Image: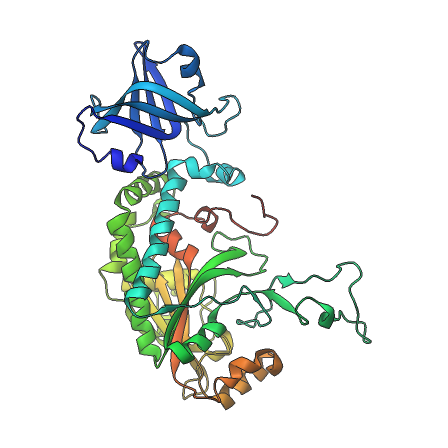
Length: 476
């Protein structure tokens, strides 16, 4: 039985076995108090060892970080903070932890330090809470789509296409890196490679997701994606997980409705099922905010921010309307924005957060962006200048979802691929779907770690994935 279940039992001096890792041990008046946690909950269970119950030799091995099994009776707790505790009869030590070497001693550790010991950081309260919330959100995602008639589509990790057209991809090859085969022109001959062509790790499952939607109507992908972008920000990873629904017969408004309903469901699921972990993370965030300047502190607590999203209708407006609001804002007129504002720019996080946190004070969906700053597959508007794109903006984070209605007209899509320099033969199969029973369709992408970042209140995306992959970092 896990500690989460044991803590919910009524104590009747029943025999119980508790297995887990020692968080703390203290001795008072010859009585040892051991806090044990097995990762099932943020809460520890206290084991009380009376003098003479356990040998001194065994008790000496019970140190912070050691793994033990405690057998005893479940009794009502005499102390504050817990309803039950274990009156110990015996202790079995599974694994010791040398207190001189074990890095997670009972004190506050910096997040930077914990990233260096990612193999141990799940044992901390902060990271065990984050990982439980991450699990709950993943479960909520599958639950939502299953309940709404979507089919889970497994799209390839290795692909020969670049869905975003950005070129920031990790190459996949079995060729000799020192002496690769060459063509007559002196270029690498990828026909000799394992797949007979250039391949890379996927940047998105969207293109293949569209293929599924053209047969199954409603599909979603949820898998790892990769960007070889040399970015060392708090919002970027080289390996991250993406959720990408794709729906036949949906247009832009339908896509916005889906994005809003989906995100509200997932966040509400976390609020309902991770209350203890979110409460712990909220307290942690409050302490962290105290060290910030007043103007940098969040106006909302973590739980208030989450309810802010679930309880408010998302404001919807066009990119052009958003630019007008930014240009007429006091922040712009007083030179508070770091990045300039004009029509045609790719909005920065500071612009997005102003719209959400200062102007509308609710989540925002922006639509109809200039085509030149968006991907080739987005459907052109009638003006030929903008596309039926949509971005969902959240408080504290800015863009959390990007999506669009897809271009379903073959001639227009072909023209866009030429404009952005994508070779027609590399995505012939994608173009061909517009020739055989083309249909309106739309979808979006949600970076899973961005969602976990928002729900946990963490400030660095490297702290919401178990083993972060970033430039110069591929440990563990």
